[in-house]
Image (cartoon, rainbow, N blue to C red; front, side, top):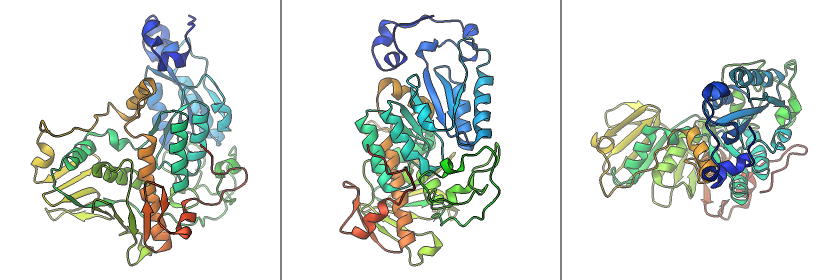
Length: 436
């Protein structure tokens, strides 16, 4: 069946209603169900490791989207990704097969791809995302959104300039417990927020891994990208198709450690509860012993203090996750967990004068919906950029062992030329800080 209306017209314009495609029987479309090929979002997956495989399996099971390409610098993972896709669509007579790429730029050059998932290690996120929006692609980018503060600002500018939709993979924003917790805090149920305790791991360290024999089929230079040249080690890029989260996230050249890994989730919830999605702290104070990697404090203009560390609740139990402490109560939230003191803070339904937060239909579905509506998703690029910047500020305080005053509106440190240099880092070879 031919259709004179392009896929992007169908997605973004009123043409959906003016020329809706006929409904085709599910048997004719295989597992894709009754969504006509011309109406599906086409997706390319860049980076097919542990986390991205989860997304890939969700995408192929969604009738309104179709994966058409995968890209990875590792041959084994790349071919495994292709096999997953081709096997799933094997009964779809309209499917033309999953293409594979080593260089993400070749995938982005395809005009028939509407959106991309970026599931690479952190040091690749910004470069690929900025290139993607310049090519007119909408983006789902894994968290933590960037490797540096400068990258965070560039990504916001690029997405806005090119009018794209970017969903940050901080899926806790789409979870019921976190929404209810933040609704309670933002509606004043715990009174004035005094402190927020965020329990996540510490900062990353310089990479000191020894050299190992190279993995066959891996483009190691491309894996490193902007990062300094160093020998291969399987801790960074595991051999073969693996089912664990690699520990490149522990090393400064590639990530910010637990501070940005889980921090991009839990500091994001702190920002949400404080209503700081378009802002951030104004001062960062390291602990007396920064080498311990715990205890940094973030001061906000409201007077609230966010503390990197655990908290012992009113019941005497020490927990991780996120605790909001106010002058009239405490809210604790973590994945699948929600407690408040007193109970009614989170158990009582919202009153007529209280404002609800958006209820997400699911993190992927919210992204699909926003690609069609052109609205901002629940974890828009600026939300992800602001939250990861909090994490970066904490790491900089730990690494440099001194107080930092931050201007969230201007995205720079206050009267501190030395610290302003820390917003980014040197890049290797052709990989410069991209321009919006």
